[in-house]
Figure 1 (cartoon, one colour):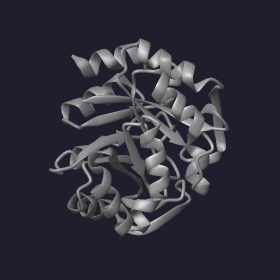
Figure 2 (spheres, rainbow, N blue to C red):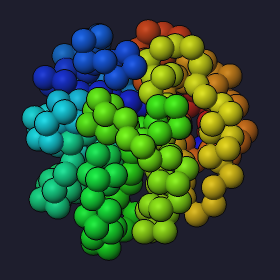
Figure 3 (cartoon, one colour):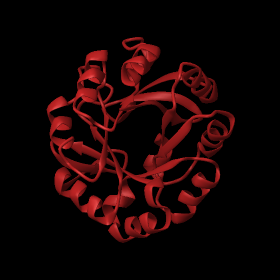
Length: 238
């Protein structure tokens, strides 16, 4: 299993939201590159970045931060948040990003997703944000009448190899991740599932690893000290 330490970006700062609520934002650092270098120094291989401003309005206000992390560290970087054009995908990939995550655009425009996968293959991932089993879009502000499992099967048919599945109700709440959901998702063949939202203890990580889930995103628990990143990396690499 791959551990993806997360850096959520807003106004060039490292922040976290509670359950996707922009009104409940905590700022952890004003130096994302320093945090990325610290993660690399502890043995991290991948970094999960989200541009929270971009997620709301489809722009790339934190592009320079993402670019500097991709260029100035040896980390493999995946980035999501407001990526809604081929030009933006190309911009990130040309900056050294390893994988681009499509969210709202992938849900609302299947033809766009097909074309992106056709052009860039496994460098295109899809972020599937779920609330009560339904897909949410636009920075989690809108919940659609689309079943999450049906959607995952649809994008698998298109050729998507990686999906980051977030249970919004668990995200940032420090009450554990949705293990029954990920156990069910682990049975989906042909698509790698990364668990996101609510990973709060080493036991969460151990349980996900035992399910053979492809990856797990570590966010708030890393910043508030509930999980030592070095311990978590040691666990997934053992």
